[in-house]
Image 1 (tube, rainbow, N blue to C red):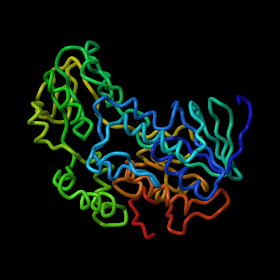
Image 2 (image 1 turned 90 degrees about the horizontal axis):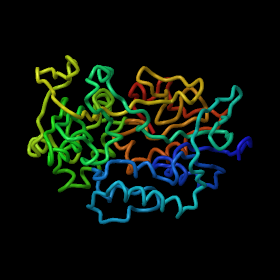
Image 3 (image 1 turned 30 degrees about the vertical axis):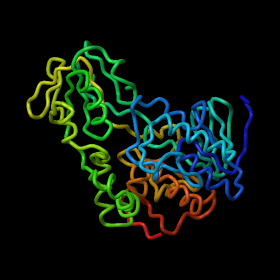
Length: 374
């Protein structure tokens, strides 16, 4: 296909849960679309997560539009099961997935439309939905470069299991859900120090004893439409996602040593704000990800690196949309159970090039936590 140009009404970049939700919504109306994905199969990125990873949301809320997750409602699915589900979802609906195709760049046409450059040729479309989610570029603090060369360092995205690490104590930097889960797993076989301040916690009782109330809270109430949701969104974007499925007490019970945020690196060794010297043969950076939209040539982004949008619809580029952005509309925007709602909104409201954007879109849209009036 190299050298050829393939024209479509809509291109979706990414065949994870966000991209597949969008393909389902547009496919119902017979849209001429194609989904481009760098992996060998839909959802394959889930197979590269750490071995013991489980979703923190029960299967009852892990289905995409039109197909429930094939497990008991209370089960917390493993990463491999999620990958299997997404692959079968795309097959069941006959989605036009173009796998093993990496997007290398995209040009925004001066008169509208888009040209997408890939490792398998050039594609053009009237509109594009970028559904690459939030796990784009691992974020590692600059002071990591001053840590001793004798210390093994890796980002949480590269962690698979305890056996892959060299012997000796481990420091996990970042007290979000991923950092806490990894620290607890490692604490069963070695000394582990978890560095950082824990993020806010969603009460476990809601998940285990009142799952309907839990979903009402995280999916319906904590959105940009409500004062409570806009308050949580500010903290979410500034400090990270809340702890779900385990607490700081659970971390203590697992035998994990807790330390404060890292203040400096002294003689190649990290020192916490509370003065604790963090001796570690391995450091795992559970410090999240940073957005990387540099492949979209000419795209304007805010100070955090995210595109200007309103509920995922670009306020600067007609015909361009996004899915899976942090708190795009609600707390669940980045997870499987929330993808369908955001995709449905884009399918209904996102214009093709040359059309007028939603009358509810503002210049900075959701970037400024504007309330939604839909």
